[in-house]
Length: 159
Image (cartoon, rainbow, N blue to C red):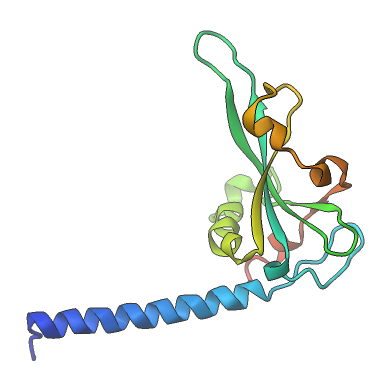
């Protein structure tokens, strides 16, 4: 067996890292071309790279000596390009959550979040103190029709 010396090993590692980076870039571009139909108007041309990824946040009020007074991550969603409705991406039916060996919501976020055109957080809670982030709720989110969309969860295994 031929042992690699230090400089040869370093060069081989750099080459393999370049190949991995190239494949990751191709996968990222491919993921951005996937389409998610609207759960309300059934518009089928909502291409991920043209959508805004929305992370909703909800507030826990202070309670007891040290509890609460923090923001929690809520649902993921997007605005339909045709009807502007907010599609809340549903993952894992509550009764199936323990049966799913993968956390599809986290897998989707890790693989697809950066493929969206824009990423925003919507702070949605009337109980929150009205300073800072709580005031950032957009008029678009406030006035949008909101509905559930289970499409991604249904097709996640083939994506």
